[in-house]
Structure formats: structure tokens, C-alpha cells
Length: 394
Image (cartoon, rainbow, N blue to C red; front, top):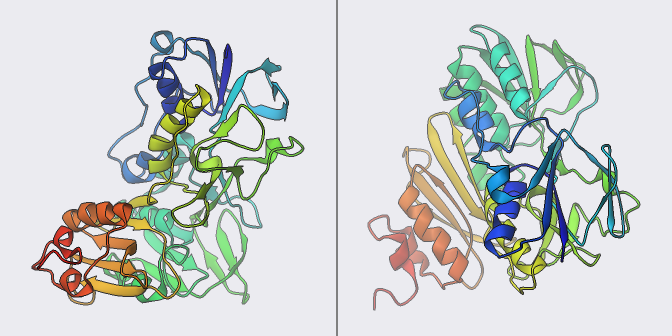
């Protein structure tokens, strides 16, 4: 293999380039980035830049040391067999790794702000001035973090959510309802069960005809994989670039990593699109290994963390239908608590922890191993999570 092109210059793209060189690939290597910047990390956009702790999140990157032809502000526009089409000309390839990430889901209307790039974060931070009225559409992970930042800057905050609980895309209602009081405690108003019809620069129109005036409108209702440019490419696009557990796509020599990849998970017997930093960090090594002749698989327990309203929230796994919830601590009374979702055969399907890092680390390991859990031991907060494996007390 003589020519490899990596499309995307975020964390996933950079980690792919590094992994290829670490795996011994010595051929021609090109990395394209749609933005006019060297690779940077995205979690700090809401967790650091927006709250004022940092002005940037650049990743260590030395193109000369990596022997990579880095082309910033170049967009991929199409794909033919052996040829990548871009707005800077065509590129031939023997191997292609797609790491184009995801794009925010837009709502009807114009003028709302979306948080996806460094420029987005800096512009939004500048608008979060004391006493500004901020309306945020979406009470997911990002919506909560934007609300946290806005309250920290002294803004008046209203969050509008169509579902009946926050983070409804990931958490069952019995768990998610315990996150709702955090908004009022932080001085933000949370409107649940409200559908948005249109967004504008200075207001949000609700479906029932009401209007919410605002100085700043932010939309955070999820993302979609950046695959529009692949239409007509003959790649299987099933909610992203469809790949196997080996991260190989439906055309030879093409792989996908990060937010754009919709990977098949043997662990969960379903297709997963992670949309989180952990996939961008860990998946590229598997892709690079397989592109250079290896046979590795990528099938981790999905993981995400969120810093909101003074709390560290960590979540791993996938909620399963008919799962049994086991609580460690009382969310209605305790500041720190954990909840585990167990399958019918008492394995950890998912876990959520609030300021309980030890519970999380141990629980995530047990979820990854597929260990059978004793629910009674797990529910006892005086017993460590790692000791809740069935038979541990014998």
C-alpha cells in the first residue's frame, strides 16, 4: 500500500495518522481537514472554552514528524473507486479512512447558534454576557453543559425539551427524571414536553403558538454523521458509514472511525454510532491495524461523560428493554449516587454515576467483562462494585 488518505482532521483523524505510523506504515499519507485549523479536541468546547477556562483545545501535532501532508480547509466532495474528490482537486488512494465526524441537527428557522466548532464556542461565549436571556433547545448532554456555562456567566436560562425527561435519548425515564431538578437548583428554567416549531435569532416559537423571547438562541438536539458528500459513492450508509466490528466499510480499502462510523457490535447485536470522544480516541488504532494487514475488532462498551451544574456525570453501556435497575444511593436525597441497569441474567447493560468515579471505573470494567452480578451486593453501598460479582461473598 503506497497512498493512504485520512478524511477528517479532528481527534479521530489525528489518532489514525499516528496509529498508521506506529503500525509501521511508511507510505504516502495525506490528511484533510474541512476547517482552517490544525487538529483540536471537541469536548473542551463546552467543558472549558464556553465556561471561560480556556481559549483553545489544540492537540499536539507535528506534520513533519509524522510525515503527513496536512491540508487544512479542504473538503471532500465525492468518492469513486480509488479516487477521492475534493474542492481542492482529486486524490488517488490505495487506502482510505473516513473520519469526517458529525454535524448538528438543524431545526426550522434561521439565526440560532449551534455548538460544533471552535469558532462556534468562542462566538457563543462572547454572547453569554451577564443578564442575557438565553433559550437552549434540547436537554441532552450538550444542552445541559451549555446551560451550565450560561448560568456561570450570569445569564437567564430557559431550556426547552420535547421529551418528558432530560437525556431521553440515552437514559430511561426512571433514571433521567432525577436530573431534571438540577436545572432549577442552578437557577435555570426547564420546560419539558414542549415541541419547538421554529427558531430565530431572538426567539423560539413553540408548537402551541407561544413565543420565548431571547437574546441568544442555542440548539442542541443531536448530530448526524457527515456523510452527505458520500451520496452516490456506493458505500453502505446505514445511519452513518456502515462498518463491521473491524471498522471496514462496504468497499475494499475503505474504513471509518469516530462519529461518522455506524459500527456493528457483536456485543450488543446491533449497529452503534458512538458520537463520543472515546470512539475517536480508541477506534483509530483498530482501523490502522486492519488497513495495514491486521485483523483487529472494535467492540467496546460505549462511554460518555458530562460536566453539568457542578456534577461529574458518567454513563456507559446501552439501556436494554426489560432491564432491572439497581441503585447505590438515593438520587432524591444524596448528592452522589449510581444506578446500574442489569440484563435478565444479571450482567451490566448500562450504568450512570453522579460524582462516583470509583463506582464508574469498576462498573465499566464489569460491564466490559460481561461478569454476572449479585444484585444484592451491588445495591449495598458499603460493598465495592468490583466485589458485587456473583460468588464474591462466598
